[in-house]
Image (tube, rainbow, N blue to C red; front, side, top):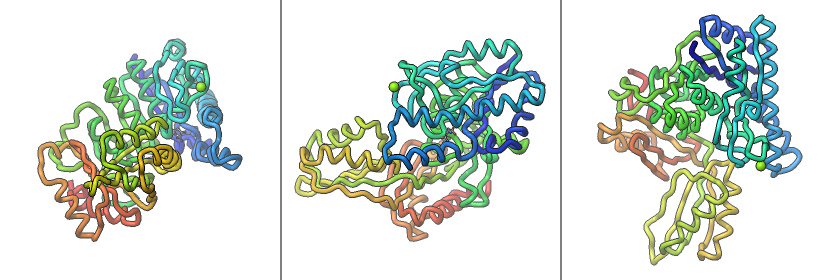
Length: 405
Ligand code: ASP
Ligand code: MG
């Protein structure tokens, strides 16, 4: 009998009614002849609420203890889901991440999985139980509780699916699947039925919040088939796998945006070897991911370097750069939180020229100024004024005919 991993997100387990509906769905999957492992997130906005709570005590809560706190959200869900299943006469057992041997590094708040021991899960499956595992959490080598970063339950599900060689990892969400853009901004957004890991990864890192980016990276590395499906209807959602032929006909498969980034500009950097290295080393040492980087043309041996980071890491980035400021002879450091990143993504870009030109034209037609640009083989991202985000997304969705296909 094949194993299916089903992951249910926060809204799927937000209320007792939703829990019962989800439990019925799980029972059906088992009755269809599958061995089922369920991964759940914390109910509703519980994780946000726990974070707020800690921040009411202090601005900078201890990172180890934050993980102990946040892990309680998922622990609540696993117990309630097991209770719901048992009430339907379906034998089930709940486990925390540490209990099933999800071992991570010790970077609290965004730990990486290093090992998964699946024995406990297999043992319970062999006893015909549905196994419910808490998403988002693991433990480091000191047996300290860690968490995998926001949205990390997707990663738990994919990693377990990989460890158990599951047939498929189904990520149940409160949306129909992966759409060409956010339907709240563009009501004409369409469902994408098949998408490659590569494109999905670019979309997720460019701001599509439906799936966690690291989970897709993991799925790609271990070739785990992932299906994003709606919790509350029978839709088939979006299949994410190695190849998605249907997409290649299009220039662009989707438009995404992120308002969670801020720009840091380091003014007056002496333009000599080693200075950029020193700036980004001090940031990397704080475990901060930098997204876009732009260096101006230098004048009189002096240049400016701008980069973007997640707004949550802005403070840390600033103090990191402050540390090397006087040593490098930097003049000034400025931040801009009023920016957004808008991206177009598509494997079709490999074989079609002119996507960048079309993108900039569409933005220019709306009077939107481009502040920074970055490209990959299948993605073009621009930084623009945050207030123009929706306007930009709508015009790009239209420009690339994503409403029509
Ligand atoms: N509860 C965690 C979060 O809100 C993990 C997850 O939902 O996947 O980020
Ligand atoms: Mg530790």
